[in-house]
Length: 274
Image (cartoon, rainbow, N blue to C red):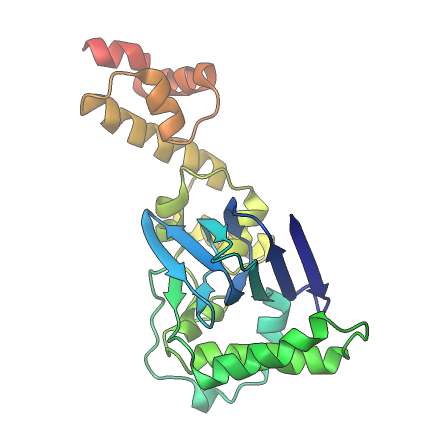
C-alpha cells in the first residue's frame, strides 16, 4: 500500500512509503534529489540499471523519463524522501548568487542520473533533519523548509560543478541547446509546454528561440524528424510498418501513412517493396 506525505513548500518535500514492491515510469518534470531511508530502489535510465540502498542518494535531472522499481527489503518497507527543485525556486536562488563565485568551467552533463557518494555526512545530516517533520503534526515554517531546500542545492553544487549547468539551465551560457534536445526526444509525446519547461524556458521564450534555429514550427519539426527516422528504418530493412510507426513516435497508423506519402511521394509500404 502506498502512502505519500508532503511538506508543502511549493510541493518540494515528499516522503514515500510502500509496504509492497512497486514499479512506475517516472517522467521528471523537475530536478529531483532522492534519498533512500529503507528498502531498495532500482532506477532504469536509458537501459542502464542502478540500485540505491539505505543511506544512498541520487540526482535525477529534469527532461527525462526513468523506470523506478521500489522494493521492500528483508521485510522492511520502502521509504524515501524526495526534494523537488522547481524553476521558481532555482531562479530565486540563482539571483542571489555572487556571479564571481560561479565555476569558470561548467558543462551540461549528458547523464540524466547522478549517484552521489554513499553516506556522505552533509547528505545524511540534511535528510535526517527533515525526517522528523513527516512524523510530526506541527507543520514547519516555510522559512525553515526553504533553508532545507537551499541546503539540498548546496549538496548538489558541492558534488560536481557541472551540476551548475544542469540546475541553472535557464541562463546563459548553460541554456539547453534546442535542436540537441529535440533530436534526443522527438519520439516522446511531449506538449509544447513540456518542451519549453524541459529546456529551461518559458513557452514564449521557447517559441522565440526555436524560430532562431528552424524555419519549421516545433510540431512540424518533430513530424519531419519522425518521418526521416521512419524512412531510414524502412530502408534498413524494417518491413513491419506498424512497428516503424510506433517506434518513431506516431500514435496513429493512418496519419503516419498520410504524412509519409506527402513527404516522400509514396506510401511506406511502397518503399518496402522498392
